[in-house]
Image 1: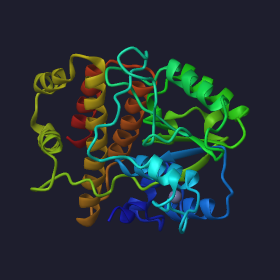
Image 2: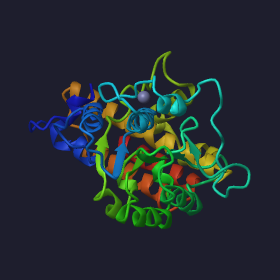
Image 3: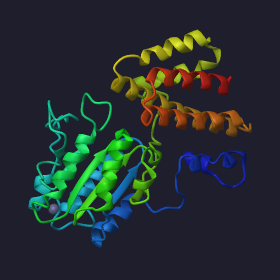
Image 4: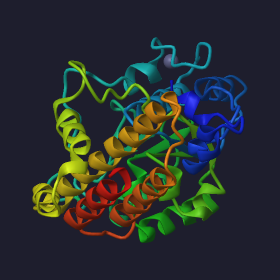
Length: 325
Ligand SMILES: [Zn+2]
């Protein structure tokens, strides 16, 4: 579906080159295949950067970590039978331990299952970011060496929520990784990660969540609400747009999450809008391309520069209103 937009055949859509804008590589092997081979020949790197939206990159990171800890992987996957696999198995019935960036209301990191060598970090439930404290605690745990004698793996999921200071702390770990240790950073997009980390990491790209359904009965309720707003933007007054943006007021972590969703849905909405225009034989407006670039900039502002979520929502909606009007 979306591949049509990635065309580089000189057509109008090709000249937009959405893929390049998203920093996506062309003609790469399947990410699952790269990871499988890596487990099979034991050529494991000290740092990986998994990128892509949706749950898939995180799921694959956990499966990869479990395969690395497994005593006898089968075709590059955890065998599910050995002692290590039993320890690393995540119980679907039990809610995972809730983390706290300050380590007060919960630990700063947890394990996959109860495997001592597989560490997992995400943003604390009440935190805006992954904290430097979380990075340091993982560093200390990794420096203690492997408990089970195998490989140690630390996963940072939602790595776009590491601030630059925390990323620099991680960088020092990457520069001198403890032996037998791998880090896996999982981020929605690579641009959220500092270049010095990116250049030291093996990049595993997952397709962005292409299955994202914007319309119809299968679409998520929140998504439908955003899409109907976007569809009607053209006819809205500035006041109405600002009113909607006001719904992103309040606790920053929650508001930022909401605006991230708004950006994701808007990006997909723009892509589909362009696709429809191309199908009708129209040349997509340069404004659509600009609007798309602005979305990426707004995402950076929100995530890296701590911009106010409500203001980001205002800029996004007013920009799209102009671009599609
Ligand atoms: Zn196993």
